[in-house]
Length: 374
Image 1: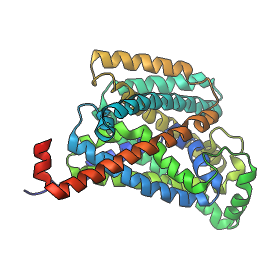
Image 2 (image 1 turned 180 degrees about the horizontal axis):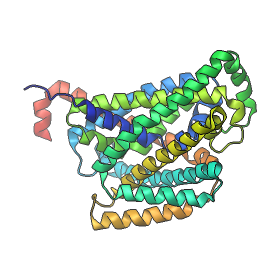
Image 3 (image 1 turned 90 degrees about the vertical axis):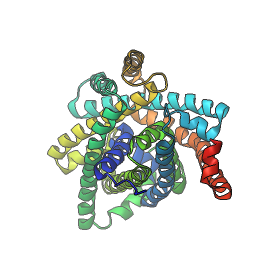
Image 4 (image 1 turned 90 degrees about the horizontal axis):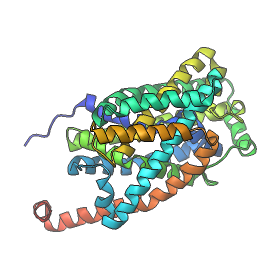
């Protein structure tokens, strides 16, 4: 039987959707990358490579299992890897975490729009919340198509910011050394005191908040090969965005001290026009991520496009809008994101164990016997 041809458009859409899912308010504003990578100086660049290695393996596995199993509900993957009881704990923990981070993203929207346009924080929260709700009501396939197109645009703009940093660095070669010396003294919050562990922790953070979404993306692929290629391309593109943003934050470290939205401070310094464009991009990043997180939360309770789904989505969006401005955005990132990363380590262990045992058994008894046992 001939293997199905690879649909490059679908690969790009799925890879772009994954990048768009991860590039939310924490990333696009620069707070995540500052706290997990740039605050460690140039070692943050090596930490980004650690992230890429870990995340490539985990994403490859999740996209693959999503395509192979075609779960009725993407949250079923937790029981698949962890069993009925531990799986249920992870299901409800994941639902609560994904929704909590959605609220963090809404806070990021408010902080961004307030910093640039000087309008009340809640105005930005309402705008993004309502746009995300409208997209969520369209269902998972439409959402993948929409944010899959947005994802590559996000990466391109992060690369532009990084290239500006590289140009400045070419004119002032000592800036990275200066950043290495200055970063520990500037009072930036850090996800971890160890730079290598920060890179690993960010991978586990990306894992725990995206497990159901990655499974849904894998299921949406046209073949197992398509799912796996999209997984690797998505992680590679996202890592490129990390590296370029770390470079920019190191080169312009003196501009981002005390800023809620470091990327906006950097782009405004490069060019007011670029600052305006980047503000629109950040809003776009947050909108697409909030819509994705809201949809993944609601999918636990109802199928797409049903009345129950629409009512729950509307209710959760309303609660998120109300509570999105309670804590300052940078405090929310530092409080919630590192803990989320730690919680994913055990699940990653379940994943690796399950995949190792499944392959070992398959090698011993053959795939036909396994399929018959299922």
